[in-house]
Length: 162
Ligand code: THU
Image (cartoon, rainbow, N blue to C red; front, side, top):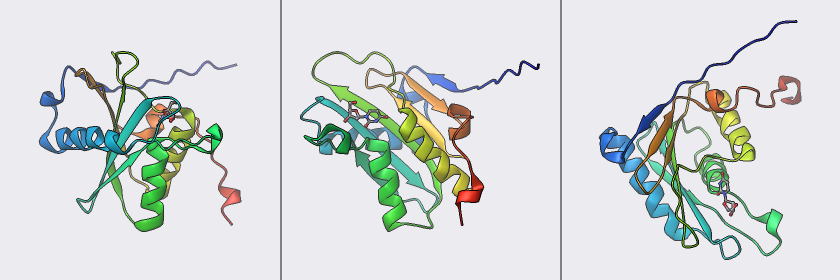
């Protein structure tokens, strides 16, 4: 029996002012995307901004539905929109933020497992790491160098790709 330890390192910032200009803009774009959140049921708005290698930025926000499971998280809305409209795009980085009127969000909100699995497939497909930035509106920012470091055991089965 072997015990294997996995180690992930990520960066923590007190505010977006400590980020590079490009990352700061991406966080601000994610914040702008909150405005298009359709979240009448949870009242929890999530916004994301994805920077492509082309320089273009794609936004996404969570879109809910009265039939709750039919809704979709902000990350997947943006990623699938890229898949549909920019199928050959290379993703450099994505920023995610959240907001609600119901309570104060004190820490960066991190992505759900379903979104991580979708992010993992985009990363694998483009064979280049995607930086993930979780931005809390109160200031704190976490920057993770790759999706693989967030989900080291994503579902992978290459034989399905036939
Ligand atoms: N949500 C996201 O948009 N991204 C996540 O990674 C987790 C949760 C959304 C789904 C739902 O509209 C609301 O947040 C509350 O769960």
